[in-house]
Amino acid sequence: MSEIIAGRNPVREALRSGRPINKIVMAKGSTTGPVSEIIRLARDNNVPVQMVERSNLDKLVKDSPHQGVIAYVAPKEYVEIEDILQIAKEKGQDPFIVMLDEINDPHNLGAIIRTVDAAGAHGVIIPQRRSVALTATVAKASAGAVEYVPVARVTNLDQTIRQLKDMGLWVVGADMDGKETFWEAKLSGPLVLVIGGEGKGIGRLLKERCDMLVRLPMAGRVGSLNASVAAALLVYEVIRQRG
Image (cartoon, rainbow, N blue to C red; front, side):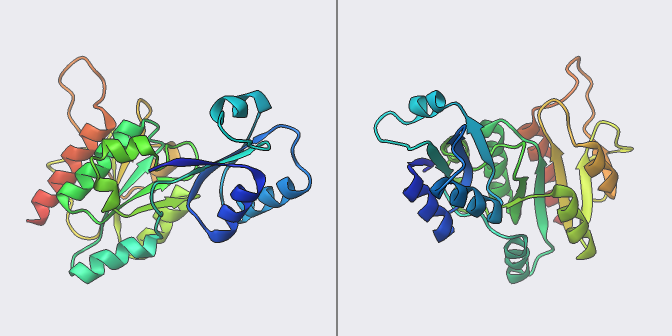
């Protein structure tokens, strides 16, 4: 499961070994010596670094000396986009990938991963920043599905969409401004399904990148569905259309 690594040398060696690290947290004012190397390694590995007051680290790590540096390690390895596409190829299926834009609730992410596993989609893409990463809470909410669903964590969703479109994938976003309801739209073939974050939906730039926007009709007084519920409806409509 998720764990915290504390101390300069343990964090530095974790970075050197390529362990999947969600985030590094450092005490403010620590930027020289071994700490500068940790910052450089984190930058080289696209690992976010957050500066906080030392007292915050004292609260997070009470049973061992942290030396002003801790790292949050993911409960499983992230994969590359190519790994997800390869899984679809090996199964002889059109790729079906779920891309998540700023999902911040770990229970939602876990539930979506569980749905992806149950439906047989090929993988999930999440952004490196402004989104929950793979954590122990996510793993628990997924009911173990996190062990079976490949998750790619990318630095730029817009760039990733363009890359996937160049590979022939059709990009469909869930949005209340969609011209068609999700059951009217054609959702077959190589597909990326984009689900927006809680409350705000898909970001403007990603929305413009989508080949098509589909909506989930809302007849009640609440303006939107929970992200994991919306994802489940759309994922299973894709599976239904694929036959």
